[in-house]
Image (cartoon, rainbow, N blue to C red; front, top):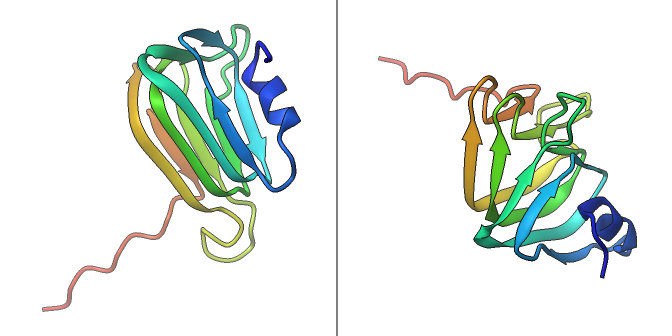
Length: 129
């Protein structure tokens, strides 16, 4: 048992694993870089995550990750981006970041977008007439 999500992430093996967030409010900024096969799951509305005070980093930041599932909790982000998904690859988006799934999240955002991908994924081409 640990008291922060960062501590739980540090205990996961390189192959990944599951982090179960118990009821309550977690006030921290979660950053995962090069993570793979990770599930972060809460107890629905009984689990809340809000960003750490003193910075404007996204509440959850995922960079160069693969097969990540974030589900089942609320994210409070009144002054910052709730979830940022970044890819540092030199080619198309999805070169180093792929299979990111967000499920059953209640996201409250006010002064910033709720989510962001960097760079933005390509837009589908308009059908020709």
